[in-house]
Length: 153
Image (cartoon, rainbow, N blue to C red; front, side, top):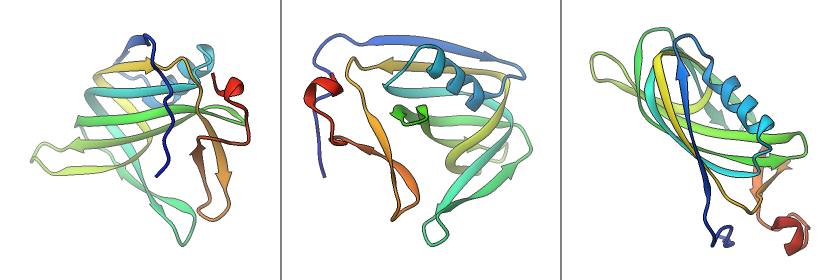
């Protein structure tokens, strides 16, 4: 495990409220780009009319998509935003509950909101950066990334 203090000062915090029909992942990506987010935590609750989850298969270096085409409650949505060479990148996991109480979870690929999704997004004043890891096939947070401390502040 590695660690780095990324904030010892006050943080900026936004409340985002998605409405019926909004696409959650694209909305979060757009917000991250427009606000030039570099190191943020995301939490949310709400509901979706449909959702696509992803389960990463290491041997194939890709996500298996799991489509749920029914109303579900967002029981837990957690994630982060970090910079990559392509700009702000989301990494969000979600657990959703069906009407019978069954839960399904994974990486959030896409989701249609119904009736709402209430998001709290907290931005740190220091930046995180993702770099592609060829061994896993994923863009992983790199706390050093060959950058100086000044670059990360």
